[in-house]
Amino acid sequence: MVTAARRRLAAGGGDGGANPVELAVALPAILLLLFASIQVAVWFVARSTALNAAQSAVNAQRVHEAPDDAGVRRATRFLTASGDWLVGWQSPGPTCVTTLAEVTCTVRGRSLSVVPGVSFPVEQTAHGTAERWTTP
Figure: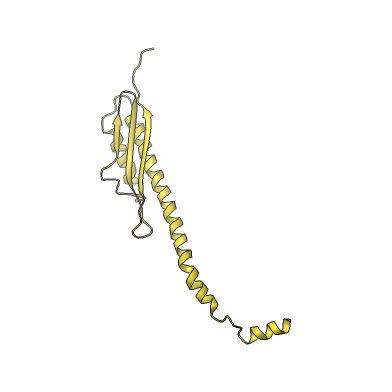
């Protein structure tokens, strides 16, 4: 039994060249999974960047007697310094809505594209209470 297997291996066997064919079939699927996983990770980083910008905007806007554009300026400064994880955020830009009791800021954009032609939309909103004077 062992000698028959040795003879078959020594003669080249019947599956010579199968490894390159298997690799040619499997490699595109492996590369697709690799780039898809990287794209998903980039999308999560873009979401985190947008959320941090929105939270930073809320923190700036909720201060007592803050200027109307304090949150938008803070979010813009944050997004400019954070790199290109979130693209297209300039149009329409961060928005903040302030009511008597609450501040809501939203940041929109798209994730950086690792796979050509693929970009995921990102929208994150943060809320906070507005600081104000109250009577006891």
